[in-house]
Amino acid sequence: MPEDHDKDVYPEPPRQTPVVDKQTVLPNPALILSKLFYYSVDVPVTTFRGIIEGIQGNKKSHYYHQKFRRVPELTQCQEGDYLCYYEAEMQWRRDYKVDQEIVKVVQERLRACQQREGPSYRQNCNKELKQFDEVSKAFQSRYGDLGAYASARKCLMKQKERMMAEAQKA
Amino acid sequence: MVGMSVLRTAASFAARLNPLKRTCRSSNLLSRTVARSEQVVVRHGSHGKRMFVIKPTDFYDRRFLYLLRNYILLTGIPVAVLVTFVNVFVGESELAEIPEDYEPEHWEYYKHPITRWIARTFYDSPVKDYEKMMALIQIETEKAEMRHKQLEVRRHMREKGDGPWFQIQTLDKNLIDHSPKSSPDN
Image 1 (cartoon, rainbow over the protein chains, first blue to last red):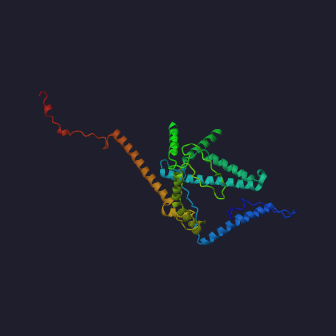
Image 2 (image 1 turned 180 degrees about the horizontal axis):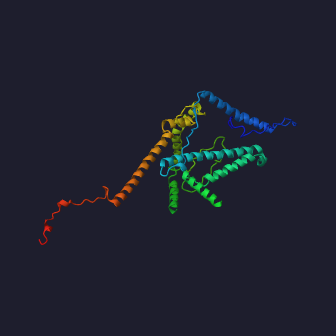
Image 3 (image 1 turned 180 degrees about the vertical axis):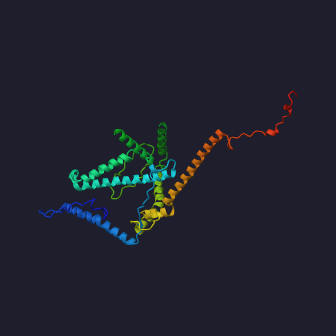
């Protein structure tokens, strides 16, 4: 996890380090293994990283996340205005990618919650479960079976079918 | 086999004829007997007796693998060294917020320095690609519009007949010679 992660979304569990109360003379294998791992893997990797960062110096270059302007959607385009269609299609594709990433983030939160809570995750992670449920249902209903050649038009037609089904049911 | 026995008898006869002039000392050359010797299998302290092991040729396989390795490493090693040096000495970029009133260049949206270099040197910016695609779409739209208009105009001109198209040129009235028709019984 990077250091600046959102502490409310991925909360750390309360520390449960027990007081060491050794009652045997035998060594603790977990401690031995952790120390072994630390000295054989962690320390060399960290020193290597430190050396490389020392070589690189402080003149860092930056990269940015591109921000796109909103353009009129497919429903707001005149018929036959192919330029408007193209811009709407590109915007829809960007939104599709963003929605996929949103679903992945929500999944990741649920997974982290389950890992944290252990066997009692079903009752402790209610918020994350509900959020994941909503988000995945919404994604399925909007982008669900569009397939590999999905486009803005197909999504619009799917929405039309959905609205017609709802109108029929009502 | 009969020939062999003839040869054998001939050899023994020749040996008996001239015992001093022996061409072949060994008496078991033509006699199909095995000479008993005092040599037995001995365990050496070294790797043993060198054997000529008979197996099918692996020359072509080894040559192929040798050439494969050499040609892969010919460009593989320089590329690996280059990428290592770039990663160690130049390093990846860090994510930052876009400062106010600053429009980043199109290569500043990538992390790895080699990707940035490729985007800077070879590729057009995505904005330019977008605009190129829009230009193509515009050209195609205009072409489609022109073609549609032409079909409409054809239809109108054919129907109404008052336009310049679909006119069939006929002769001038003044060129007709009416003289054969001027008198009825000519």
